[in-house]
Image (cartoon, rainbow, N blue to C red; front, side, top):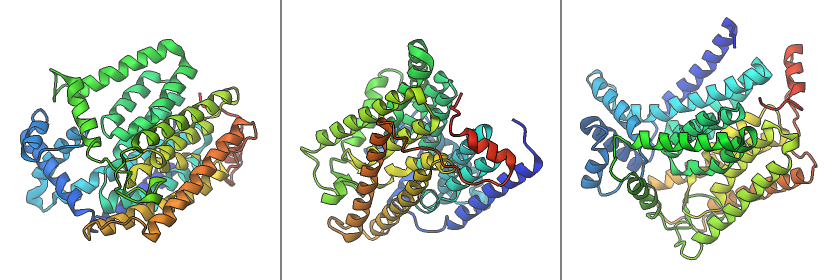
Length: 423
């Protein structure tokens, strides 16, 4: 892939402007408890090293709900903060720097993927759609949350699966899951794509690569009983949130936030399991007309369904869906509709909850904003199901309708999006 100076200048300008906007937002108050916790984790990793991190945190605090790959990041940036502290650079700014770096990485992944297949201008549009998304910027630059890290690895894993690089796809997926457990939402689709595109043998090799990656990442932390180690981190943390909705404006948000999910937990996961099976069934039935767009929409559906259906979901779990919508934005008109509405609902969820969290986190059950945003999300979720049903019936509900591009070269690239599958 060759690059011209003008192209590099435009891309660098977009990245620089986006990063400047984010840096200017850094001084805004994130969630005080989160910032204090991150600061403690960064300092602990820098002072004690990776090997004893969990031992020290559990001894001092009694809990830790972030999986092992994050600790490498805590250590690297915590050490950097200690080195830069004499120069007046504060740890809080480096904490917010981390997710914004990965956000930039996601935008670059989107650009390179789209640019290679469909041309320069469409690549820039798709990248800009992600770079300047207000909900994405708010999550990383204002709140300072780390969702961009695991999203980066999920986007990378999906692209590698499209490109028939199954073992590498499995490795990056494993890193994503070792960063945030909600990354598991994409696992069924990656398994499906690897099997369909590469066969059972490569799927087995990919499973080996996945398992090897998990053990290599956790080796510095625990080598005597890794299964118990991971179970304690994942299920122990998950068990601390036995509520219907942990500030997520989703299906359960309609009936109240932070309500006991006893009796509803199994139902929520059963619904998500059935929903996942339906999405993969549609993709399988339409495989003879396979298009990467349909697979990306399936990924969007899994992220959306994971946010809407299970209990114990947080407000940020819709975040990865934006990257999928950015990938489809230049090609699918209905994806542009989803992009606008989901951006608004996610931004509303994030900003409203952050405001109340910093005021003491009162019970917002029945709050009109919670109800309205939850209803809009539910309507959009049902609409996405309808589109998948139409796709199953062969109505091509997700047909490509590319944005108009001026040059003949780019128009030719757009026309090919109707039929060209990813290699």
